[in-house]
Length: 174
Image (cartoon, rainbow, N blue to C red; front, top):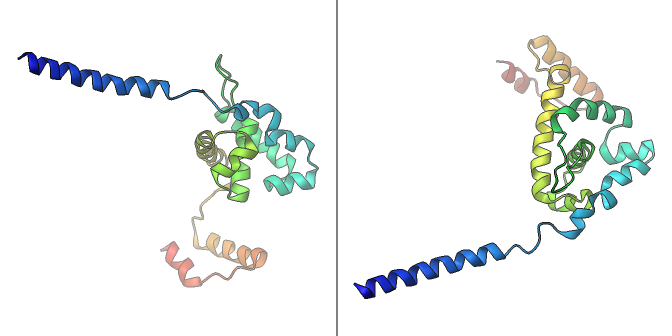
């Protein structure tokens, strides 16, 4: 009986010893360079860019960007807390557009946006969802008739020099 009690006590000691080590592993809350987002972020670069450079960087002009920012800000804006300053709607949108424009990885964007890749993955998914919800009623209409599909095919052929296979187009309508 005493031996079983001793082994039980020993097992509890071993189990709790591992828990204490896990608690002490995190030595810092955030990397130092991530805390300097205001100083080194791509947002500072955007303030300095000429209109042509802006268009090259985000694939849209400043007027279109500002209109989009105004539309999505109520949905992606966050409040500052006592722990840290929130990532602004401007930073969120510009990081998302840069990701969509370049297709770069989160790890690569981490260094230009000065945001962690974990934050970027959440921000980009959330912002894309908001952009879709805000723009779908005006810009992302699905064709409802054959005539609309024919017009889209003609526009693609004229503007993009795309060849569209009529069979595939008709199959998608049916």
